[in-house]
Amino acid sequence: MKSLSTVLFIMCLSFHSMYGQCEVEAGANGNICPEDLQTTAQLHGEVVSGDMVKFEWTSTVYEPYLDRYYFASDFLSDTTVLEPVIMDYYGKTIKFFLTGTTSSNEICTDSVELNFSRWTTTLLQKITGKAPSDTVELWVASESCWPHVQYEWSPNYMISDTTVRNPLVWNDTTVFYNLVITDTLGCSITDPLFSVYVNPTATSEINDGQLLSVFPNPTTGILNIKTEHSIEDCQLFDLNGKLIRTTRESHLDMSEENEGTYILRINLGDEKFTYRKVIKVKQ
Image 1 (cartoon, one colour):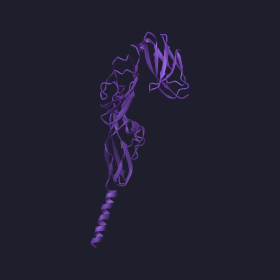
Image 2 (cartoon, helix red, strand yellow):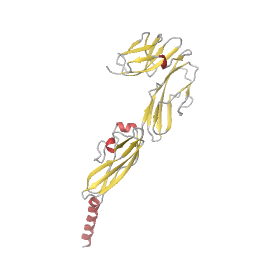
Image 3 (cartoon, one colour):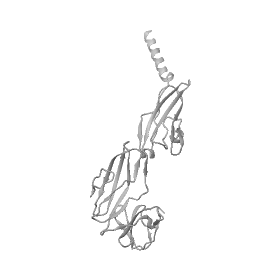
Image 4 (cartoon, helix red, strand yellow):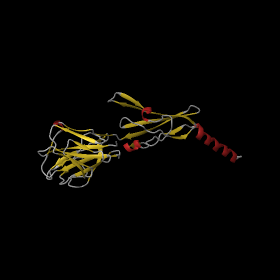
């Protein structure tokens, strides 16, 4: 008789655990990097106990610059499933609430807080020219909404410090410096390549106010160079520093080049040079 009572008691406890209690978990707090959003960043809700018949994710974020409120439906692929995909986000940190409802209308809630690493990159072209004996300062084009904690410049060639934001370089030959930046969330991004071209004699660069334009850019074939100066020559390099072609005309035919990014060096005479990043796309 005792054993039967014990079995019934255990069955009652199990039934109550499965169907009587309402408990959900919204998952662990964490950080979301840009590459996570490009793959499968998800919320990971879970039913701990209870016969759930309904789920709902909620969240409210105020964006002061736009004077607008955003909600879970603006961020998630589906607010009524346990593991929705995160489609978008606004702000640095978002708190999501998961609410579960049982068949007896019992309601339980849990929350999860996610930090998002958002990066912005300026359109300033990281290209400069110098004489072999000159020293120039490198700069950063990408910024995270979180503080930076690490800089990794490469190659380690004639550079003052590969771990600081703005190192000095005195390279005696053309070098393409690469930079990886990491923020406090542990998220990293590769900054646009910094091209430091070395000319055999002292040079000066013209500024954009002197009306030089390169178009169309990106291009599928013919690249036009328009300037109020006369053009001595134009040299097209790949990102490894290899000279691809040279022209003395005000246009350059790139129809036979592979898709990708190139550097155009424009010699305007009187030791005046300027550089432009050019992108070749498929026709």
